[in-house]
Length: 517
Image 1: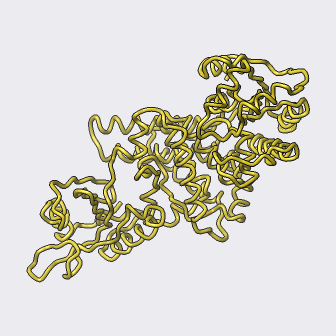
Image 2: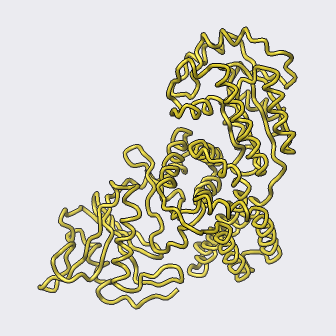
Image 3: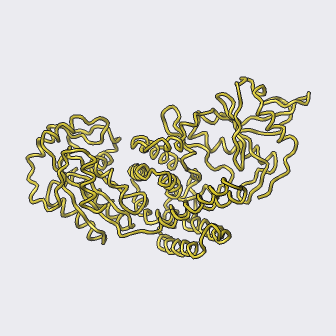
């Protein structure tokens, strides 16, 4: 890093913006927050972000002109997805009387990104500290990421494998330079296993580049860069200073968020985000690319370990100790992501209201690899076939037998791809016919995956009560549908039968005991 000698103008600007009287709206106070590349001044309901006069190998804010360009680029990149937060770029000017003014008519001596202030309590990082993140919120976050990626510019001739290779080389060098933090033998093992993973998935990643999955992404997609604004998750603070850092595979972009959720004790939330994102995507390539997800998660955790290690060199005492512990913890997590066991396919059958989807969603995060099994739900697959939203009710013809066959075929194909990629799957459907159960068992056999089937049962009255009480659910089943299903000839049920008439927690405990999951 090169610290450019801060001219009096920048030091003076910092003092100027720290003064409430410098703002036309006269806030009661001003809060100052610092990062390695910027200072942010929170003034009432507004915020002003100044780029530091610094130069890193990957980030150059060394001149006033560079800072102006980067402010403009930050707004241009972020405003399309956060229009209410990014208000524009404003100059701090030197007026004819020698005084500084915000947005004056004199000569510009500094530039600021002008933003609308939000409540820090609404940052996803802070919400996560308060307890488990709600499934509905995570689905909306996944939807926001999917929208961002669909709009992201495609990169022609890009090679996703090379991007991961660059990150791995950087990590190898960083770990080798800090043997006091990263055991040399374990660091070499991390590099070796990462390269083995990369070799296995390189062709897949190159193919994704040709298919358009390498894009100019967010690049810094973690919990502190997502905020709940007026009830909706908003992605902000995307990388503006280095296109190379933000030019990557869309799944690698998402992997940062998945890793951050997982490391903050929110694996169920990470599992929900991944599942919803893949449901929105409908891209076979995204299922195939699950083979690269363990490596992507490992590299994301490794990068966090490297950043924490860098901080220890700038700190002392307790702060340095905490950063050292953080570096080691992220390294251990990254190393752990590379442990990928044989994939499993678990099929959960039973009549409507038996709790299949509830059990599948609760069970999925407990299965390896991270962030848990892909949950394939027949209700959602049926909605996808008709281009419907999850809670949109379908017409009666959408439940014709031919449509149901297509639903089961879609689940089987997605399960096959995910299992082939080494990722575990939970298939959640009625599986009321013997041939449906046989077919899903065959998917596991063909993929060389372990298989377990579970059949849930509950009293008829409880089934009807549950479906009648559903609100905002993907299932269209009613008490009348349950009554029809009770007359089904299911044939012999050879899967283990679990009584699921009690609480969802009791059903989960019984299933985990039965499945050793």
